[in-house]
Image: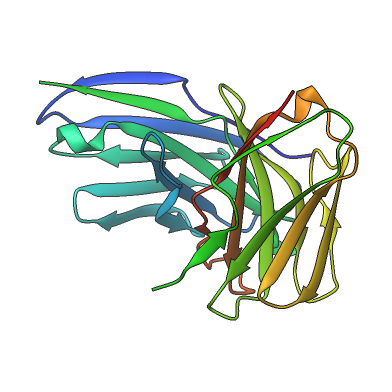
Length: 110
Length: 113
């Protein structure tokens, strides 16, 4: 089967750096994705890693280690608008089936 | 911009009713998905479809069925609604490539009384 684990909550101050970890178990691996969801909104895509290493997109970076079945999302220069839920997701079953973790609620304080 | 439209934002139904949730996407995406979202449980996959008339069970298909007669439309059916199906339902679509991002609709908040 497939499962993902991530912390339920993280709190950080404005301007700081925060890392949200994700460990996964999957039969067949087709990449690790990250999504952001603000309260009342739809999840939106942030990043995708298929290979080991760090991918950077502006203030957000995502890291993957396939040998450790582990990845993280790094948010730099935190802003109040970054307060949201963040989900890691893996693709399996030929890549079609996308499974999400339970989500990490990020609180950014002034 | 990709648009995924769910027919209702809020829906209230009675126990035992047959419920249809509709989802339409305008990007000619091959893959479509139905998730339900509950506090503390994240997004759980109910069913997905990798092409027209094709469907696969997700992790929690019990009590649900789906229909994909046209490429742009993916319907979720609750055969006999129960109170434990009260939830937020999210539809998503994407290209048929595992590195293609999911595009989500705004969700349907279903309450079964």
